[in-house]
Image (tube, rainbow, N blue to C red; front, side, top):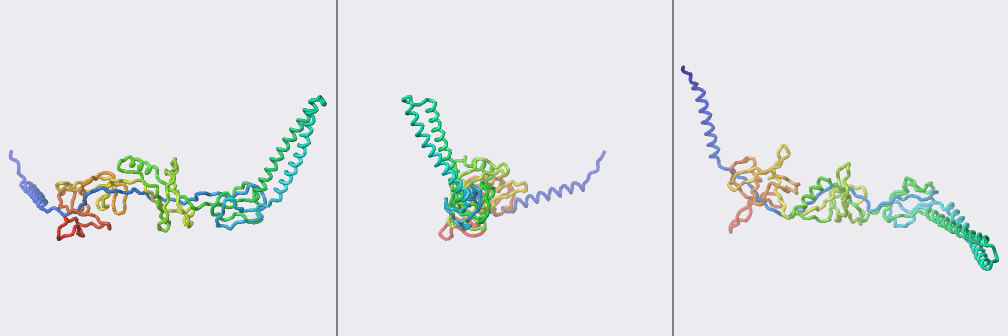
Length: 396
């Protein structure tokens, strides 16, 4: 049996193969594109963290009355600075003065009775020695003396209590600081230990700034500090105010809370700042910058050399010794101005492609041109210095 031969199909396959061979030949003959790269190096980098923070008073005391009565006078100016022990309010002392006078009179009476009882007890004791009195009478006289002595002690305590209450009619500042608005005026009735404070005193110099750091970030920092090339940072803290200006004075990190807030998953850090001009006020929101660590061998590369895929993966293009592009998966820590701090994926002396990525793909041969990034973030060609050419030239 003879089978028909499909000459048309053979011709089509041959044409396709011929086209692919021509396309591959064209690609092989195409010149390698020019790309720019930087040589990866290490540098010393301060690992700073910026956190939202809130200003709180270093001391705060709510002024409340400890006795009940009518306010006779308010003896301070709202918003002014008061000293510890300064008289703030005067409560009508008439009732407490009367109680003090009564307690004093009772004490004097008790002291007089004590003298009489003491003399009688001594006299009976002497008579008992010569059998001049019954022992029962001597014992009764001694008991009367002890009761008089106990009464004297009781009235002495009552007098001291009355004196304390009388002194409490003078409401004084428990701490030094700036006092706020008074909630009562002259003639108002106040009660002992009432819920509403008469006024609040806050100490503003020095002042505290409370920052919140995520517990996950705290764990990352501790793991980072295990690296021998990374050392603990300083305790200095810088502030940026709500209007974007920098606060003149540096603060000092004082403490870190020993528990995690279950509702927010954060840990509170507290810094202390000088506040001589009173610029920082309690309740103010600021941004704090803390130097948490110093990396002696940090890898910082231009942000334009790091790419991000749709799934959030970071990668870079590296040129090998044969001038062929390779794709590297990298892990970034955070952005530092116009650079990325790299945790893994790049090594010293790697040739990182920074310009021309649109011309290549992994496996492409390239013609690399070495560049460096200047202080303004512009790439400049690296040229071997000669007598006629400068060491660097602008432009890539």
